[in-house]
Every structure is written in structure tokens, then in C-alpha cells.
Length: 345
Image (cartoon, rainbow, N blue to C red; front, top):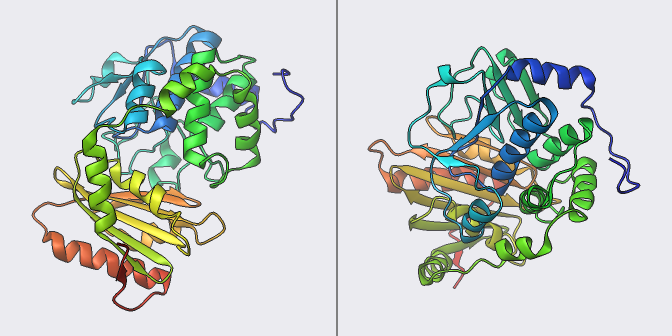
């Protein structure tokens, strides 16, 4: 791509493209992502489907599970990535020439596919790299990249494909949200992708997503979250209780890390039979992915990178109060904080 004179150091060469094509087969390819997909996941899946279709005439089907509940994400799903289908059950894998996972990995614990298939494709940027990845026929996992869509942009570049305005808008928004406008865990690859996508997107559609309307329950939940927030020196913890949407913990963490003096913000919320955990750290502070591995222990699963991490723990009859207390204790130990803490409000 030469629409902008910005060098893209692209590791995706002809050999890797041919390996991807062979693994994909004739199609259709089943494209999956993590439960409760975020903008990076939604855009990455659409970009992979675009690549398969335009480069090799390989059809695909995009299927997700869980909730897309955040107002902006709902708007994105409706207007920018409507190709995604919701399915409570996993489709019959025998109906597809290959299975692709984007923005997640087998064994990550945040998706329903925890086994490696004979024709399996994984493209992801999350830490840690799971043990199963060594047996995946085509795996591209780079934890130094800020968003999976930046990796997909490199594949489009290698195929000499330009994303259409809707795809460019979806990819740009996925990249922007996962890196908080390049301020969180962004690499040079993300920076180049960001600038190039910016010049191809549909600004009206982007505004439609970013300014999606919010219901009254959102503000009630936000108020409850603030009233349940405590400050322990440079660490912030918020117990959100029962959440209507599982990604609300991440939304609160994004806000609380902006508190003056905060170096890390941990938000804990219950949705159905799972405890959802979101962690944010200052861009120049501790690695959130390393902290979350100390905080979430089995049977929970967690992962992340840079200043952004999250995890899920199945409740399975556990004493919720004791579970929350143990998580908070490990978090404060990881942050080196002691004391009782003070209420935010």
C-alpha cells in the first residue's frame, strides 16, 4: 500500500500467506473470537473474512457467543460488522474446511474452543501465549502488538488489498479502543496502521459508533460502581456487584485508571455464574498482564498485555465474599499496598 509514505515493517511474506491459504482450504472457514467480543475482536474477524474472500475467493462465516452489551460495541456490531452471527452453541466443525480464532487462543478460557483442530488458524496479540499454540497448524501470536487488527492490517497489506470505508472504520475503532488512541501498549505497527486507516475511514460512521446513546441503567450502574470504589495508595478497587453486561467491569476500569495518583485500577463484577475481572495500569507503570496472572488463580483464566488485562472465574458455588477478598489481597500485595483504604466518594 502506498497511499501514505509511511513504512510498514511487515513480517507477513509470501510464504506465510501461502501457509495461511493452505490451512484455510477451500472454505467455508469458521471464524470465532472470544466471548463477549470487543471492537478489536469484531473488526479482526471481519478483516480476516475480507482477506480470505478478496485474496483467494474463500468464503467464511463469523460466529460469536456471549453479549455485546456496551452501547458503542452494539452500534459497531449493527453498523460496521453486521456479518457476525450470534450462536449459543458451537457450529458443527465438520462443516468447515478450517477454524480460525482471532483476538483469542485455544486454552485462553474466554472462548468455547479449547482444543486444537486439524486445520486451525490463530491470530492474536494477547499474553500469555498458551501451551496449545505450539500444535496449531497456523499460529500468529505477537504479544508486542497493541491490537489484533494491526496484525490483520499487515495481512491486507501483504495481499495488496485496501479495506473499504466500513472495514477501515471498524479496524480503526478496534485499534483506537484497544490502545486508547495509541497511548496504551501501542507498537510501531499499531501507529502505522492507525494513520493509514484514519485516511480511509468513514467519519460519519465512526461518530455514529463513538457517540452511541446510553440508557439510564448505565448511569445507575456507573454511580453504584463509584460508590463501591476504594483507594489504597496508588491502587484502586471497585466491587461492582451484579452486572447486566459483562464488559461493564472493563468500562469502569478504563475510567478509574484516570483517577489522579492511581497506578492500577481493578474492577470486579458478577455476571450470571462468572466473576469478571478487569485491570488497568498506567501506560508507563507495571505490566497489567503480569499482575493479572498473580491475581487470578485456577480455576480462573486471565490474560492481557501492557496496561490492560482481564480474567474470568467460574463461581461454581464458591463463597463470593471470600473469593473477592482473596483476589483483592493478591492484587494489593502485587502493588505493594497495605492499609484499609479509603472510599472514593
